Length: 542
Image 1 (cartoon, rainbow, N blue to C red):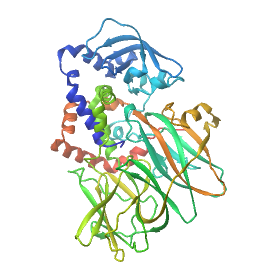
Image 2 (cartoon, helix red, strand yellow):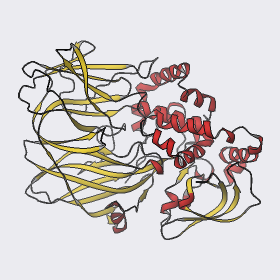
Image 3 (cartoon, one colour):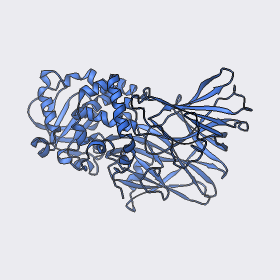
Image 4 (spheres, rainbow, N blue to C red):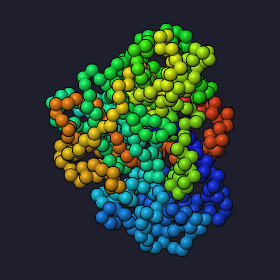
């Protein structure tokens, strides 16, 4: 879900390979014992003693039992506790410390109350809350439901659409940005055109998950168009740039072949009737093919349009991995923050399960040729994107044959078509004029969200904001796109702590075939129920 499984696998691999001394050597026993006590929900120490564990950039760890956050931007953590050095040797007795946010990699705590107060921003943005002891604010869930707790970053709703349910979320942002160093900029089509005469546009931003969302900005990009036109965007995977195209002709597929059966009504409309293939019980990477035929004879510059989202496969794998990490979750994420090689490796997370490949049949070569690819993270909102096609060697007088190839368990498809690209355009950025919370104007949040100035909004579970933007010309019709930047921190669930198992984790990251066959079988058994459970576990918002 956020991401792909390798987000967790690679970070865990780095942790186990470079920091295995946390688990084994005798001189770490004192730290390991205290760490275990802190995370055991049934122990008196965990139930009665709130704590903050602060992982430093230099490898040291502070364990504080009383604390407060100081500074105008919440940049200083002041508290009393003990300090362990990089080798986890305790340095003296308990005493007072003041710790600057710039020196901190990640923080974990079982009492999140102090971090939700005003002016705690920079420190609070580094915290992984644990659902034990003083932070037992979560409804207990067991078994399958523990794997289906709603989550995946900020969610957005356009206009009067405020119903949180499958197929109603208009956008989700930075789904793979699961820690501060992995902060990402993200762009999504809202699939929303403003009618002529409309002066403003409203967008609802919510935190409907057990996560902390740290948002730098939320911008709306607008492109004027005619009523007969549609604007699509492309994220160029190679150059990592966003391109916008005005299209004036849409061509549906004449034929849709799935498993050699004609299913021509599938994928012809944006009707939320998604096509997806169930997982292979032995191989999560098993491929699915969809063969399409188009009449592209009237298209000067053809682009492939696809509306799609990820399944809950990566959610399942992500949550399983976090469970295997157990009480060492913060140690692992601290390594992500401190090691540039690990972060670089995490930028290519989809080698295992892959993208959606677009292949074109070459009659001369009598073979399918890879033409382009689609890829976007997240299981919540559908992505609507375009990819220009290279068809210079294709005879347009004959039906254009296109094949979609993808991991069958990973993707859900709603719509596919060809579009004639009229021109590439540059969008206008709309002005954020107002932010309201419970119908009350909040100028402070407006200032935090309006620009890329490094000042961030910390959003907690249950938060909801209504953002209003000014449209540039009321006589024009606009296609709208959402751009946002930020990251989020997953809250550690009580149930996950009980699953800690470093051997399963190691076998998972080593791509052990037996382990992966078991994961495939386990996911297959739960696949049919996950979608319903997932959407029924959203955190309520106003």
